[in-house]
Picture (cartoon, rainbow, N blue to C red):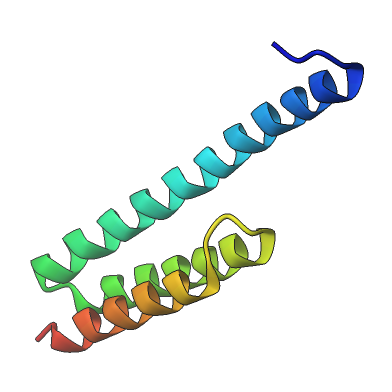
Length: 87
């Protein structure tokens, strides 16, 4: 347990931020899964729309600091190559 008032405040803030970060990360995972399902099913147009959503979500997550810039860049690159492999 925190010993000071400022430590209590930091604990409350970190809990709130943790919930927000977890929801952003969960949304990213859902969008990635949705894209992967569309790509494996061979629905290229739908997968392209889903890719735009995923890329946008990754950029927003980087902006607020949930995901590192290099991680987002790597994942966006791999998803784009996966889309290009779809016939």
